[in-house]
Structures are given as structure tokens and as C-alpha cells.
Image (cartoon, rainbow, N blue to C red; front, side, top):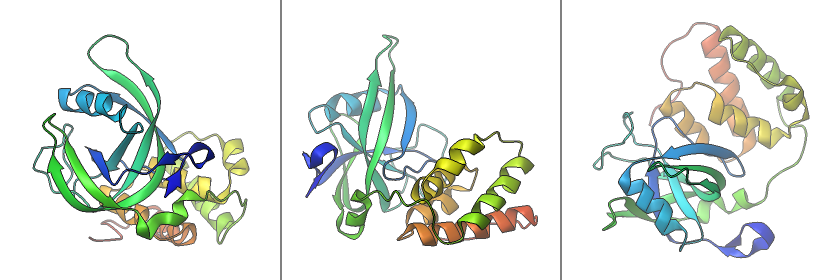
Length: 220
């Protein structure tokens, strides 16, 4: 299976894992990270010989960074490529990750360099490789209206011109990653099979929050 720019980079079956609480990465989206722990400095260095790939995955129980080595992980995460890299020479790296496609963990181990690794299966998520540029999708108008009310209620500033110009898929991905949902809610959204399912769950979450309901909309 080939992925990436001009479909030239092969997907590794064994990847390094970077567990992060409350963080999910959607395909084609980007996240900036500061990397400072020795084991994850090693992970970044080692990734340069493995296509610049790492796997982003959440622990099942929220944990402050650094995530404990024995923390149980969700089985679904996202393969990411290091899109940009900067070493300011202060014992930490500044990187930006680009989401590639989701994976399912089939086995885990610990590298001699201190970070966790996994054998992964991409089979259920091959459709992630084709980014949709369609502007509209089911319930887009309702989704944007509820998003507007939800973010305004939390005094979160948004570039609404960018929202209006975003594709349906990009809009859904951005909401999943940036809205302050619980870790389990973000995980459930990550595991949805398509953008329409994600949009409908986002609408449900917005309705619950705006109506003052408490508790997660989903459970794992």
C-alpha cells in the first residue's frame, strides 16, 4: 500500500507510538507539538530512518503528560508524518505532524530506546487516503450554526471566513480536534467510519452542551 506525496511513501506495519491525552489527529490535519522527554526525543530521531512516521494514540484513562509507560491505550489511533521539524538547541524539538490514516493496534512492545511501538493494521481505514474536497455534506448548515453557538458560549474565537471556505471533511476534522470535548468523545469521533457519522455526533454533542446536559454522549 502506498501513501503520501505522489503516492511514493510506504506505510510501515510497525510504528512508534506517541500517546497523548485528549489529543486526536485526523487524516490530512496538522498538530504542532513540543517534544522534550528523552524517550520521545529518541522516537523522533529514530523516525527519520522510518519515513518520518509516528503513531498518535490516546490512553484509555486521562493522564497528565507524560503518559505513564503502563497506561492502557485505545486500539485506534492515527499514523502521522513529521511535516516540519525544528531543533532550537534547548534539549527539545518543535515538530508539526500531519495525519495520514487511522490504524488499529494488533500488538505492542517497548523499544530499547524507551518508547512504545505497535504492530498495526490499516485495513479498515484505506478510505482515509482519499481526501474529499466537497464543500457540502449532510447537516452542514445545522452543524455550522450549532458550532457558532457552542464556540461563542465559550468565548472561543474563530475565523468564520475560513469556516465558510472549508470543505465538509476539513470542517468536521477541525471540530473533532479543536473543540473541548472529553477524551472519550474525541475517541468515539475518531473511530466513526465517515464524515457524515462524525457530523451527526458533533451535532448531538453541541446540543447536549448547549442544553446544559452533563456526562459523555458515548462510552467505550
